[in-house]
Length: 369
Image (cartoon, rainbow, N blue to C red; front, side, top):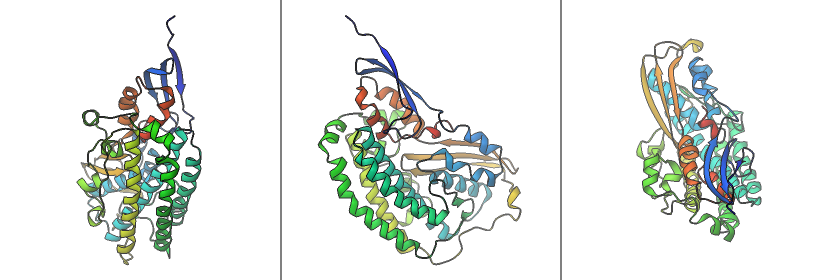
């Protein structure tokens, strides 16, 4: 007797999902025949919210577009406003921004490890990774006053200078995290269960990666050495040495190994920043006297940054008023979580859905923005 197609919803609550999203699945037995992504369970409408507020009011909104890694939104927004207004940011502020972006990348990668372990039912991974991530959040709280939303990178520079002894505490954390990486390798990345389930699953071939506009670790796991930090350096990335890790398998395992290598690169970048942090006190550009009513000159700009999930861009238009005429945010998740994921899941097994989803590093508010 022929089997019937059944429809189920995977999520929005699941230990292996990076955010509040759901995938509607048509199943024939355990095999997926159709997949449709549903988002909108969290925030939405950010772009219009930004356009209806003054520049300084909008500054507090952008970080919420990506909960796991809000700082690239702050940096993109600030740099876009600075380009439109012709603001020159002090060098130390650029070093501080680069430091914050790499700290944000580290905590985002730790959260990714937690989700990847959770997607397999390997719950010691979330326990370890979230606990170690909390140590980075402690440093963020000390620097910015917030653990998740920092609102630290503001148009013109940064909000405050380093607390006394902060760089030493950051260096101590980097030493600790580096010492933990072999344990993460043994716990998850060399785990026979993970190797058996991740290799050859969720493959993205190079042609598909280019056709769909895949970015970040997902693209680098297909052998492409694309990274905005190298290709179009911003802030102080042109002053630090690092490599862009790649893999060629294009599968869940390859994406995990790229992220693992990127943690080491972020540790190296942060150590260079600690050594080279200027002693000067200037951390903010000269700003308009009336902070409540900045007038953004007519013009447009496109700024890009490299988040932990890939290329992040802001297109911003000023029209001479105190509000931005148009703001369009492009994060990696729309491609990874909808057009790519919906095709990748067809003919996959139900047990692999969460692992494939997490391996792409998606974030739903980037889509419902």
